[in-house]
Amino acid sequence: MTRFRTALAPLAIALLGLTAVPQQAWAAPPKPVPPVQGKQAATAASPCAPTVRGATTNTRLTSLFTTYGNDNSSLNDWTGADGTYSLRLPSGRELWVFSDTFLGRVNPDGSRPPVVEEGGTTVFLNNSFAVERDGRLSTIHDGTAAKPEAVMPPRDKNHWYWAGDATLAGGIVEVTYQEYERYGPGAWDWRWHRNVLARFAPGRLQQPISVHDLPSEHGVSWASGTLKDGGYTYVYGVEDLGSPKYMHIARVKGQSLLGAWEYLKADGTWSASEADSARVMSGVANEYSVSRVGSGYVLITHDTTEALSANIVAYSACSPFGPFTGRQHVYTTPETGGNIFTYNAHAHPEIAGGGLVVSYNVNSFVNTDHYRDVSIYRPRFLDVTFG
Image (cartoon, rainbow, N blue to C red; front, side, top):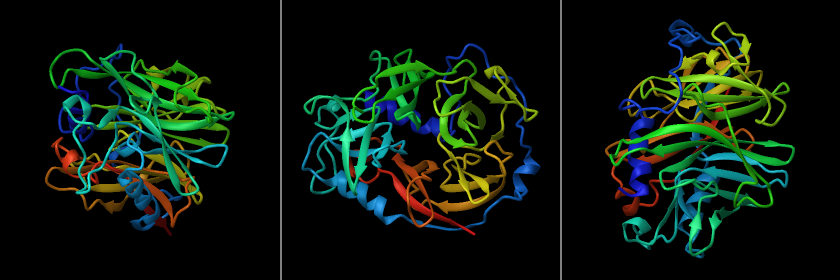
């Protein structure tokens, strides 16, 4: 079982909620409390809800990554990835934060060589960065050009990190990561282990300047998304039971995630104890976003209330912590079908576009599809407009 197969195949099925999540590593199971937001509330529109008018392809970003991924002028750079978080750096550059990443050559027929672990030349990393400046991209990884390594390196061969959302605190880049661990030889012998925060200097993104533990004691993966609002940084997480997946919300006063966390309780108040973190609502994906749109807040997510969903949906609220109600259809991903599935839609509100810029990921249940067609494992971008 290669690292590539370990990462993509089981992760894909787990993200889509097609099976129970493998044995987890937290100390105690979450409290079996019902979601704060009831089923009836989810269908009622928020008074602050903007109306989704439509979604169209953001051709600039989609073309940017297509052109860059196909360019063989360098053979240790990005040819495909998932995750697709973004952060505006103090210099004005855009930092793109990726999880599983392919580096290497693209063949003239649009295929890629197999990964190194399978006898090919394609490098596979569990996380990477790309930096966009003046419409041009560059790949950031640790190691050397001949032997690239992840920007957030694993502590050993049985652990790896997938990226969450990123934020800026006092000029320092703070990126959240979820650590996973392998505990046996089987395809499903892996589990979420903990959440950590890696801090990077904007001028030296190849490796973190420090790594810190984040709250991890009650089965919530932080942070599916973050939002700065009203003097707080809100942190959105997911309690992933395969199906369903529950939203949790925390917040930190100020900009840095190293501050004191407090958690949204079932009664709508806040607690300093992670054990009190409530299931706010179900149906979110492992990656989602909450963004300010007009006078309200819009939650963008793939719809995980149905298996293998091609639908991206939006909920709205009058505060960054909900209740999120009035589900609206945003977009049906045209790639979905056969071996191909889409997942983890979320917004990039700092990026200018013809509306709220939203990305989503494309993947295949058949690993060799990623060799046959490089276009599969690349993000797609939308402009979502509201009325």
